[in-house]
Image (cartoon, rainbow, N blue to C red; front, side, top):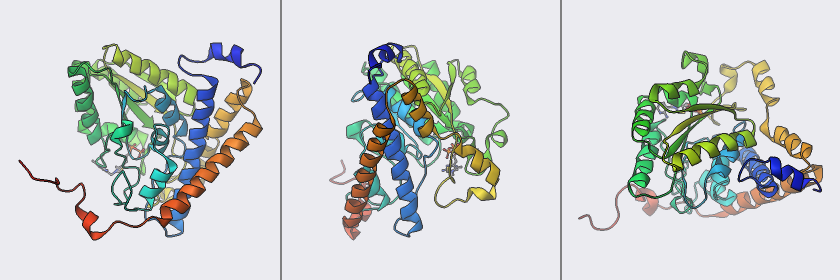
Length: 338
Ligand SMILES: Cc1ncc(C[n+]2csc(CCOP(=O)(O)OP(=O)(O)O)c2C)c(N)n1
């Protein structure tokens, strides 16, 4: 790592060589968790999984742009890497997939990636697509009214931008200069619906103009580029200059979920082509080019992540399932109602 001092000068504000390697490690950990989830599903051990393969770069870049302990994340169901990069552990991820009693996201109800981790500034997500965008704007408005420095990062896919609530949220946020950032992870599909059947424009970012906020496009297969765009948008929001819509162009490498078969709407050639855009080898090349990592380091990171996922799997599988009494946890208010 002899060239680090020279490289450091060229890195975006807030990114150090160690942070870049940590970012890479989170991307690898996410990929291995994702592979494990699908393998467990095919083994009949877990009923359902949602993939984030192809989204690792946009999510790692965005997570590292957040000010930990201050900023809030309002994610959607595809945000495994955002969550794992924001303090969620592989054990917690696996515990949720196995629907064990100790699942801290959804109390063993097995709706994967429906995070709710307030102690790590991750708000509960909504399965109703785009509904959480209004929730996130409401949170950001509260931070503004209380003069708190927090910025809220709200994520969603391009299909969600067809929902009325999405438009209402952006309109309101811009009028009131609410401290939030809207991050669209544009993977070109909403389940089986390609973007061209979803909207008559090429870029989701163009929608920002209709609400009087900046719309920025970034390469969502590059974590450093995404980090820079999201970081700039977050600091703009923190200064009180209002929200930004960032569109990170990425892709979905697998079927929508374990219940979907992408071969019913994608050609084998398209699926093959998508593999050439894998953000992990791309980031490896970026790190190597700058003398920030080498093959031995990648191997070490991969082995460590594999051990972590293996241990998390064995541990989570051995945990007890929820009991009958858990059926109503988080469904009705507990304690006396006043
Ligand atoms: C209001 C609503 N309509 C339909 C669905 C079913 N649904 C779940 S995910 C999804 C696709 C969303 O696509 P996009 O926002 O592009 O995100 P992606 O899954 O591609 O990451 C749909 C239509 C839903 N959950 N909520």
